[in-house]
Amino acid sequence: MGMKNLYEKRLKKWISFSWKDSFITLGILLPALGTCVLFRRMEPEFSRTSMVFLFAVFLVARFTNGYLYGVIASIVCIGCENFFFTEPFMAFNFSMSGYPLAISCMLFVAIVTGAMTTQIKQQNQVKLGAEKEKVRGNLLRAISHDIRTPLTSIMGASSA
Image (tube, rainbow, N blue to C red; front, side, top):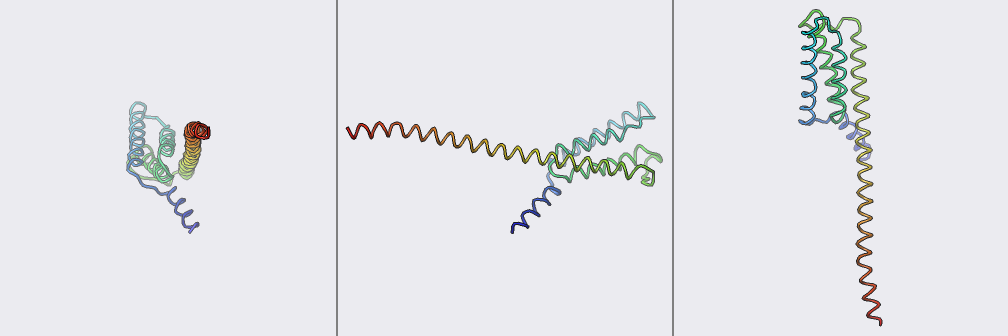
């Protein structure tokens, strides 16, 4: 039973679909593509599309849950860069040198950022749980004290 739960947690870390994360991903990737198109029109020799896409992958991995959206974003960004911004334009050509490195870097950025974000969220949940427990204990102590004080007075008065 324990191993099954551990496996399900790890699988959920990798593959957790949500519409919110899907919209976040689209909300980051579409402006990144638009930015690259705009820069390319202003400066035809603009060669920094990979940096814009790498930053987009970082943002997707940071603001979504799990690893799925970061990995998808890295694959989409590599495809967009290849299709729209390398010769021959409007065609895929993955045989060019440097693509294995670009794909590896974007996947690495997505996975590392996703892992760091997941760890930070887990640490915050643990911290929040500890704070809740501390507040609960303080509240119980205060209530206990407030109830004990009149009881002590009543017991003292009744014994007299």
